[in-house]
Length: 479
Image (cartoon, rainbow, N blue to C red):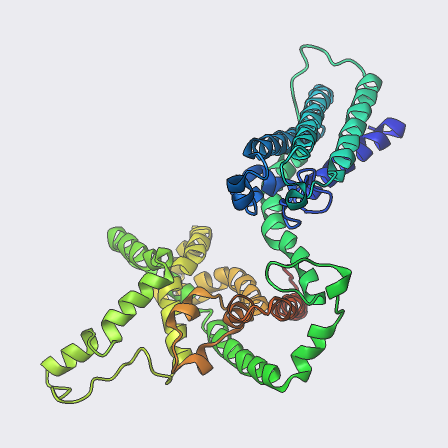
């Protein structure tokens, strides 16, 4: 589609994307009808969680300051508005098809925009109802500016859709609904892109806490804006600087072991695929994959039953005479010795089978004629493994290696949280655990946000740095 009509179509799609994104941000939330609705929730949150929407309303409901029906109406309005946004998004996706698909997409967009307006109108009705509350000074009614903003945008979408629909030629009734393959692939990819946005990019909105003197439960305003105070504090405060150096040493040490042993899943997969018995191979693969689905709490419970002072190891040693009955049993789990190796060992045991799956899939994709030709040439089993299987897996290995290098600062939290104790705290405290203790444990949310920001930035730099090295050495890149 070209010309002015095509430009208007682009504008319509951009507006649709803008509305979808804004539904996840607290700014101009149409459900913000009074002070009891948190400044931190978005329209999407208000629509999917009634408990979050009414989190500050328990006492007002109980004391009769505000009628709960008002918030039920608000909740219904938010749901209708979000469903309308979803329908509008579906209409925008249909616009990638042929003429008949475009016509249908425009009708769906209009339907979604009408649903949005109805939802916003219901939210405004709840605002009118909240003004009849018994204690207005406690409820603090607020004009929902988002209702006006989002409502006007929905009206614009309706007008644009009607204009585009009038400008398009009429579609034949026998015309099938068709879409080019590239657009089908894009729509298949779109849900994963949305999930990546929700869980990877939307949380970056929380970086703003690093520039405020924020306390849990407070608000962000010009009064508590401190600029780069927490950034300088991180490096000028001697205690914080010492903690950070210790944390980085542990993080890089444990992650370094994981990077250096990144080849273990590949070797395991290669040897597993050489096993002749298919039944035994499947048993080993299942047996080594299951630990990946066991929570770290259960893993720690197993470790405690094996290595505690009254665990299996000490009990067995006493029974066979390796440890005298009057001797003090050794607590292998709680000590501070070889903590990095212990954490690496438990992590490897838990993940090696799962990590090998991608290599097993890669081996099945290697051309079998290469093995047949090698057999004719007199190559043995190990020669075929070394000259065919391993080279065939190297591209996959290097991609996973680069990803491991990029995530060298991300050790995770669960494993180290459950294995941490008073004795090994100095050698087990990694960056993720430090951020958790700093933000959730100590309540220093701005400082923990600063540490998280540096972690993300350094990880991105490592990814592109490792990718540049790979491109220089191998001529291939993953980014």
